[in-house]
Length: 353
Image (cartoon, rainbow, N blue to C red):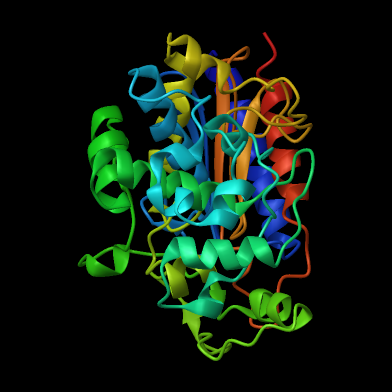
């Protein structure tokens, strides 16, 4: 892109971000637009700056899926492997063994495993993971087709720990962040000195309501009026997994996720290249990625706290947008997907060859 094109792109990205900020979609945001080699545009609004850490919520799943794909690419496992084959805890539970009999790593990555979308593991805080999983699956009927499920990626996080023989936070650093040079992407940032962390919410009002609707009682929720800063917004990750899980828990800068996307823009490995394409029998799903209309010409993913990534290998362009859309004392009245779609479509249109 020439200088005039870059200036036009920067002005448009700032305009979209400031407009939705002004509409009250989020208190703060950081946005990066990039090509395969460098950052083209960086815009921050509200109280955020480009070096701040955000709770990326389900963007954690992309870190998990990439680690699984790297293991498969290295021949250490196959996506056709059954998850039960890695865990005697599954094979030793008659119900789990039958319930997960046909669940492969591929079906977990594409959310076609038949496992329900969510269950509050913290209802049974302190009990072993596979015992709670068995209980959860006994209390949630099997599903069909593509059903986006946190439980799929809880299992993939456990898989990484089993294969690598270390805690997931160490897996992240040793097998993703350091080899790919991603920078500041980590679990448990509250343990570090001097980090600026953007608050994500006031307690867990949405999960409290989800539990109430299911008739589930849990008395350990954080106070509603206190900002959540540096600990994970996601209830299962925070209350049950001690802030480290395969489906949620990562804090990162926009630069770190830009670099992860650039890895996918530049890779020549066939398996990693296939991850960004819709998989057979999995409408709207790549290998960890989403491939819906929100991601023109490519793929991406969103996070519940207001985060998103998108990139197009065809166009060699992408965007990372981190917001704290839940950080309103009385809840968030606006659907952040409107902002995400507007941003992605704006960047796509302005980078037409």
